[in-house]
Image 1: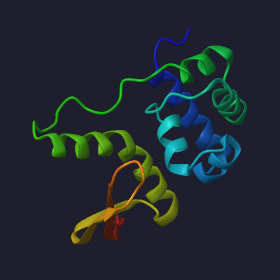
Image 2: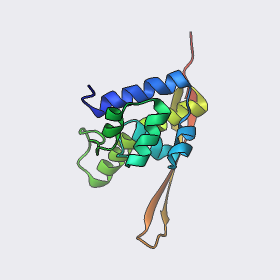
Image 3: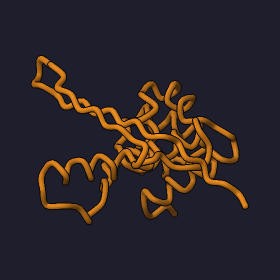
Image 4: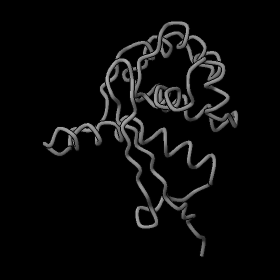
Length: 147
Protein backbone atom coordinates (compact mmCIF):
# COMPACT_ATOMS: atom_id res chain seq x y z
CA UNK A 1 0.00 0.00 0.00
CA UNK A 2 1.29 3.44 -0.95
CA UNK A 3 0.65 5.95 1.83
CA UNK A 4 2.33 9.12 0.57
CA UNK A 5 3.48 11.04 -2.49
CA UNK A 6 7.02 10.69 -1.15
CA UNK A 7 6.79 6.92 -1.63
CA UNK A 8 5.82 7.43 -5.28
CA UNK A 9 8.78 9.78 -5.78
CA UNK A 10 11.07 7.09 -4.36
CA UNK A 11 9.63 4.55 -6.83
CA UNK A 12 10.13 6.99 -9.71
CA UNK A 13 13.73 7.72 -8.73
CA UNK A 14 14.54 4.01 -8.34
CA UNK A 15 13.10 3.27 -11.80
CA UNK A 16 14.90 6.28 -13.31
CA UNK A 17 18.22 4.97 -12.04
CA UNK A 18 17.49 1.37 -13.04
CA UNK A 19 16.32 2.33 -16.55
CA UNK A 20 18.97 5.07 -16.96
CA UNK A 21 16.36 7.62 -18.03
CA UNK A 22 16.93 11.34 -18.58
CA UNK A 23 14.38 13.93 -17.50
CA UNK A 24 14.41 15.59 -20.92
CA UNK A 25 13.32 12.29 -22.50
CA UNK A 26 10.60 11.77 -19.90
CA UNK A 27 9.40 15.35 -20.51
CA UNK A 28 9.11 14.76 -24.26
CA UNK A 29 6.81 11.79 -23.63
CA UNK A 30 4.77 13.70 -21.03
CA UNK A 31 4.52 16.72 -23.34
CA UNK A 32 5.72 19.31 -20.80
CA UNK A 33 8.99 21.14 -20.16
CA UNK A 34 11.85 19.25 -18.56
CA UNK A 35 11.74 21.63 -15.59
CA UNK A 36 8.04 21.08 -14.89
CA UNK A 37 8.18 17.35 -15.55
CA UNK A 38 11.14 16.89 -13.24
CA UNK A 39 9.45 18.89 -10.48
CA UNK A 40 6.25 16.89 -10.97
CA UNK A 41 8.08 13.57 -10.82
CA UNK A 42 9.83 14.75 -7.66
CA UNK A 43 6.46 15.37 -6.04
CA UNK A 44 6.08 19.12 -6.48
CA UNK A 45 3.36 19.31 -9.16
CA UNK A 46 -0.06 17.76 -9.69
CA UNK A 47 -0.37 15.78 -12.92
CA UNK A 48 -3.44 15.34 -15.09
CA UNK A 49 -4.70 11.80 -15.57
CA UNK A 50 -3.07 11.45 -19.04
CA UNK A 51 0.24 12.85 -17.72
CA UNK A 52 0.14 10.52 -14.70
CA UNK A 53 -0.67 7.51 -16.89
CA UNK A 54 2.25 8.35 -19.20
CA UNK A 55 4.61 8.70 -16.23
CA UNK A 56 3.23 5.44 -14.85
CA UNK A 57 4.08 3.62 -18.07
CA UNK A 58 7.56 5.15 -18.29
CA UNK A 59 8.48 4.22 -14.70
CA UNK A 60 6.44 1.00 -14.39
CA UNK A 61 4.13 2.33 -11.66
CA UNK A 62 0.94 0.59 -10.55
CA UNK A 63 -2.53 2.18 -10.60
CA UNK A 64 -2.28 3.25 -6.95
CA UNK A 65 0.95 5.18 -7.62
CA UNK A 66 -0.57 6.77 -10.74
CA UNK A 67 -3.51 7.97 -8.62
CA UNK A 68 -1.10 9.66 -6.17
CA UNK A 69 0.47 11.61 -9.06
CA UNK A 70 -2.91 13.27 -9.62
CA UNK A 71 -3.24 14.61 -6.07
CA UNK A 72 -2.17 18.21 -5.37
CA UNK A 73 1.05 17.96 -3.32
CA UNK A 74 2.26 19.96 -0.36
CA UNK A 75 4.95 22.12 -1.95
CA UNK A 76 8.15 23.63 -0.69
CA UNK A 77 9.47 24.33 2.76
CA UNK A 78 7.96 25.81 5.90
CA UNK A 79 11.21 27.48 7.02
CA UNK A 80 11.27 30.74 5.04
CA UNK A 81 11.70 34.48 5.51
CA UNK A 82 8.69 36.69 6.28
CA UNK A 83 9.54 39.17 3.50
CA UNK A 84 7.02 38.48 0.70
CA UNK A 85 9.56 38.61 -2.14
CA UNK A 86 12.12 36.46 -0.32
CA UNK A 87 9.32 34.10 0.67
CA UNK A 88 8.36 33.63 -3.00
CA UNK A 89 11.99 33.15 -4.05
CA UNK A 90 12.36 30.52 -1.33
CA UNK A 91 9.11 28.94 -2.48
CA UNK A 92 10.37 28.78 -6.07
CA UNK A 93 13.66 27.21 -4.92
CA UNK A 94 11.84 24.74 -2.70
CA UNK A 95 9.60 23.64 -5.55
CA UNK A 96 12.08 23.74 -8.47
CA UNK A 97 15.39 23.33 -6.60
CA UNK A 98 15.35 19.52 -6.56
CA UNK A 99 14.52 19.51 -10.28
CA UNK A 100 17.32 22.00 -11.01
CA UNK A 101 19.75 19.86 -9.02
CA UNK A 102 18.78 16.76 -11.00
CA UNK A 103 19.13 18.58 -14.33
CA UNK A 104 22.46 20.21 -13.41
CA UNK A 105 23.88 16.87 -12.31
CA UNK A 106 22.71 15.23 -15.54
CA UNK A 107 24.36 17.96 -17.62
CA UNK A 108 27.56 18.61 -15.62
CA UNK A 109 28.06 15.70 -13.21
CA UNK A 110 28.26 15.70 -9.41
CA UNK A 111 29.02 19.18 -8.12
CA UNK A 112 27.57 22.58 -7.29
CA UNK A 113 26.87 25.92 -8.89
CA UNK A 114 29.07 28.57 -7.36
CA UNK A 115 27.46 31.50 -5.60
CA UNK A 116 30.89 33.18 -5.50
CA UNK A 117 31.74 33.05 -9.23
CA UNK A 118 28.13 33.94 -9.95
CA UNK A 119 25.99 36.52 -11.67
CA UNK A 120 22.29 37.26 -11.51
CA UNK A 121 20.46 39.17 -14.22
CA UNK A 122 17.02 40.53 -13.32
CA UNK A 123 14.98 42.26 -15.99
CA UNK A 124 11.45 43.42 -16.60
CA UNK A 125 9.76 41.39 -19.27
CA UNK A 126 6.69 42.93 -20.91
CA UNK A 127 3.65 40.66 -20.95
CA UNK A 128 0.03 41.30 -21.91
CA UNK A 129 -1.06 39.72 -18.62
CA UNK A 130 1.21 41.98 -16.57
CA UNK A 131 4.94 42.59 -16.50
CA UNK A 132 7.06 39.66 -15.39
CA UNK A 133 10.31 39.37 -13.48
CA UNK A 134 12.98 37.63 -15.54
CA UNK A 135 15.86 36.19 -13.52
CA UNK A 136 18.91 34.57 -15.09
CA UNK A 137 21.38 32.89 -12.75
CA UNK A 138 24.88 32.16 -13.99
CA UNK A 139 27.26 30.35 -11.67
CA UNK A 140 30.49 28.51 -12.33
CA UNK A 141 30.10 24.74 -12.04
CA UNK A 142 32.37 23.28 -9.38
CA UNK A 143 32.70 19.49 -9.52
CA UNK A 144 33.29 17.53 -6.35
CA UNK A 145 36.72 15.91 -6.39
CA UNK A 146 37.69 12.49 -5.22
CA UNK A 147 40.66 12.00 -2.95
